[in-house]
Amino acid sequence: MAKSKQAKLWLQFAALPMTQVGGELRVLLVTSRETHRWVLPKGWAETGLTPPELAAKEAFEEAGAVGAMAANPTGTYRYRKRLKAGRRVTCLVGVFAMHVDQLLEEWPEAGERERRWFSPAEAAGLVQEEGLAALLRGLPNTTGI
Image (cartoon, rainbow, N blue to C red):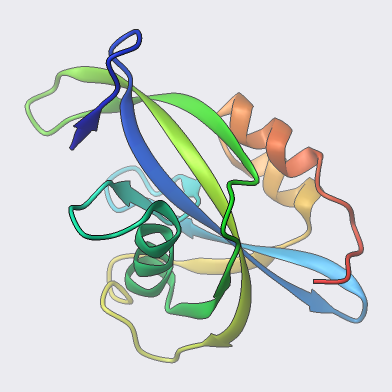
C-alpha cells in the first residue's frame, strides 16, 4: 500500500472500462467483495507496475476486462476505506480509461463479484463515492472510443 506524503492519503489506481453499444457509451462496474457496492476495479500500487498497468491488472482480475489503457488519468476521486483491522483511511484513486476489447467468460474473481454495463448517468447514480459519481456524470453519453 502506498501512502502519499501530503495529508496522509493512501494511493490506489482504478480502471474505467468503457465500450460503445449502438453508439452509446457504456461503463463497466463491479461489486465490491464485502459490501457488494458498485465500484470501479481498483487496487493498491505495486512495485514494477505503472499506474495504467496496475489499473489494467485490476480490470482483468476483478471484471475479466481486457483492453487498451489510457496513459494519463481521466480523473481522481477520494473515499474512505475500511481496512481489515477496522481502521479507516482516506484513499486518493487515480482513474484510467480503458477501451474494452474483450470481456472474458472466466476471470480470477468471477465467483466473488458481479459485473454489469451501465450508461455513465446510471453508473453515477449507483456508486457511493461522490467524487466518482461526478467523474462519471462528466462523461459523454456517446463517444468515439
